[in-house]
Amino acid sequence: MAWSSCLLLWLSLLLSYYVPLSFARAYWPVGASTSFYHFKVQTLRVTKLCQTNDIVTVNGKFPGPVIYAQEDDRVIVTVTNQTPHNITIHWHGVRQRLSCWADGPSYITQCPIQAGHSYTYDFTLVQQKGTLLWHAHASWLRATVHGAIVVYPKTGVPYPFPHPYEEHSLVFAEYWHKDVLQVEEDVMSSGGGAPPADAYLINGSPGPLYNCSATDVYEIAVVPGKTYLLRLVSASLNTEHFFAIADHRLTIVEADGEYTKPLTVDSLMIAPGQTINVLVQADQPIDTYDMAMAPFMSAQNVLFQKTPAVAHFRYSGAGPEAPSRPAEFPAFNDNITVDFALNNLRSLNDTGVPLVVDANLLFTIGLTVEQCHSSHPNTSCQGPNGGVLAAVMNNIAFVEPMVSLLQAFYDNMNGYYTEDFPGVPPKNYDFVDGAPNDTQSLNGTRVKVLEFGSRVQLVLQNTGTVGTENHPVHLHGHSFHVVGHGTGNYNPLTAKLNLVDPPYMNTIGVPAGGWAAIRFVADNPGVWFVHCHLEVHASWGLAMAFVVKDGNGTMESLPHPPADLPRC
Image (cartoon, rainbow, N blue to C red; front, top):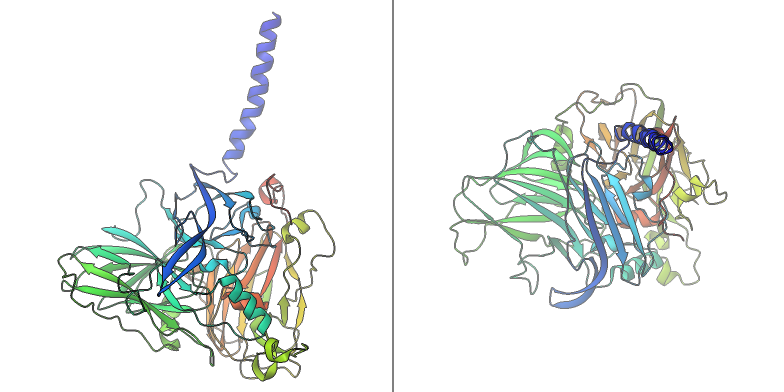
């Protein structure tokens, strides 16, 4: 009898444990299946453009390994730092549902992984599929520490377009002979602009237009008459790019991991942090065609690399010695081509754009020039008119804290940030064609607090204090609906908004001398970084963070930090 009572007690305890766990699994984002990866951050010696250099990579690969998964999968990546540099990895475009601790930006959601240490990133791709990317989010290490994320639809779910014959990922990057950490230090200490890259790269190869690179060319072998899906990933550091294939048209079917209505173009612009999927038909005469990336530069008086990176789209049967057909590009500053795609890009599916807004925000973004206070102005005040370049949102240059903002928020630590980031510009003036009387900015680690579930409209307004240019702005932890954009100053009375089928993205190029309006629902508790994805602008301060408060119950609350979270 005693043994029977013990058995009944054991069964009742098991059931009391099992039933709630089953219930939780129906809601908590734990993933349909789980993929495990081990990223070893290592130094790799490479020879490019006639020189041999040491670069930081993952698992000795450049670009790094591809993360493969399916929609709703759980992904667990252990990152071990085998270099002397601090490192974090950001999973760009992953919405990190209830996993803010795994987002990755240094001093925002975690302290860096120090030399000889490891950290395990654990997240679920809740209702996400398509092409995303991962990259370092500490210093300028993204230049060589990056790779693609390919998320397939669930088993049995087809693409919403004809199934391609093959798929290929093309990762775009910039390359410097100099150590990128030294490049960053030089820029920040000079007060001036960033030097141009020594080369552009497609899947790690510059192509034949660069010195010593005749054989350092990435190539796709294609079969005539077949259709190919190209997953374009921009891990570039400071330059936006046009992409084109000689004599072939590109049909955009996805942007930032979300399906779009098909849009066919001769060339497209892709900004750092963006991903675009295109279909290409091999419908031309048998030959070798250039696939190339060339710079798009909307700013004036900025030095940039002008030589395109070239890969080859080689038809079966094409002679190996025959010269390839060159790709044609718009002018380097052609905003019309850029605007065409933004004007015509539409979501394929209903993404639930908020029709009612709870928080109406306006952020000005742009560059400014600070007064020189250095005792060595010739070396440290190389900005315009002997000043120091800075970048601001609502006239505030973001200052990186000494601890993780998320940790400070979770532990109620005082003194590391303030909750007074303004929802509108502190000064009202002609943002595009004018300048405030006092161009000096404020410095601070300021956040904007959002109530859980808030429906937010954020207008990003380009400013012309130093000069206008296209700014690719990325929001962590959420995707957003690009409901409108235009030239000049945003006017709510005349702005035309698309509330029917706007593209659903995570990185938006705010037009030079114009504005972009986005909407999103703040339904993911945590601290979420907002910043320009031109690394030099982020380093100068073009950033801020949203704090999304907890909602009701476990499923609307920030979970506790993982046990191996790095400490500062």
